[in-house]
Image (cartoon, rainbow, N blue to C red; front, top):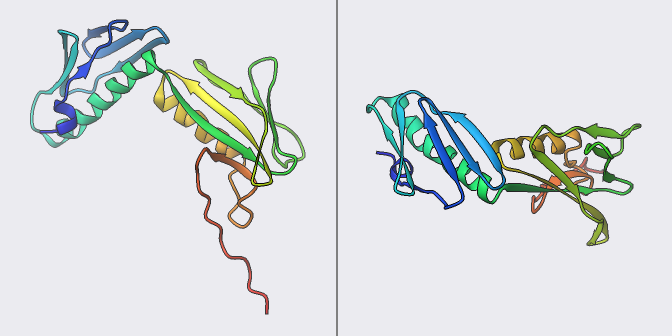
Length: 188
């Protein structure tokens, strides 16, 4: 049995859960999320708890048991607290700002500014620039109710200008990310 799949999910008082085979809908103060439960797993809602049960001990059903429980728990947490990922834009002359249409505009060393339009349900916030160890860092926060979508948007923004491996002081990185520096060419 899956240890993660066996543990029940506590339902907060302000969250409403509806399960119509095979879909589950979670609605809370921050928003609403829908997901289709994979075949082989059933969801039981009652007594302020959600329990996930699998129909058989087939390998595919076993592998999806804990995953189903984790994804539903993330949905419950997302509609109550929300999720956020923090990024930092680091480099001389590198800037990030929000345009009037809620798009993120990045000046990160290209000949033109790069515009990123977030998908529906994602909020991007740019804070004031900080000076950390003599370098300017611009914090960018990506937030929303869907954990998977927040992570995907943060990864897409980071992909615009990844931190360099020879000059790790330039680029977009996650908050707290440690960039390993490669050795340059040896001078003789």
